[in-house]
Length: 240
Image (tube, rainbow, N blue to C red):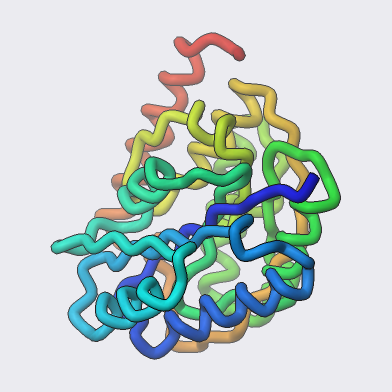
């Protein structure tokens, strides 16, 4: 039986890219034989000050499977994830950024894996890391190694476009709105809730001007606090 998918599309000042992102996913949907009623788009306009909100509303008027949520202020990915999960109704839930950075090849791999396998989580890793600037690659390697060491994990990447069964995803406690929110979710689901997972390749389009947010002091603090809170949670929460 075909599996349905909720696509969370976070968008902050993505007026130039949002429609192209939806169009790319739609091409993949058709190629994989997924019916339009088996997919829903949850666009979260995260306090954009360009035309992102208007474009999202225009897309929703032309498609019954697009939902739009507007934040008055910019709240960040972790917060928006919680909002989108609450709105989701399909079998699987995952994130495709509204910047059209994700290649059609990656989206095709995700959809193919979901339709043809039976894992709880699909965890992408960067297969063309050379598309990222050198400093971003170094920081990403350090970040991944740190979480693997501290939590005895063996994942190749923590901040990818993970797709999870919605019921098991809802078991995870979202303890941060900061950049490490996905690491916390994966660690909880795999270690605490014994979720099955498969790592799959992810390809991204090169965006040379984009910088990593991990070195901002605010985010360094939030990541450190999240690690502490996650350690405490795993010590006290029962296995399920």
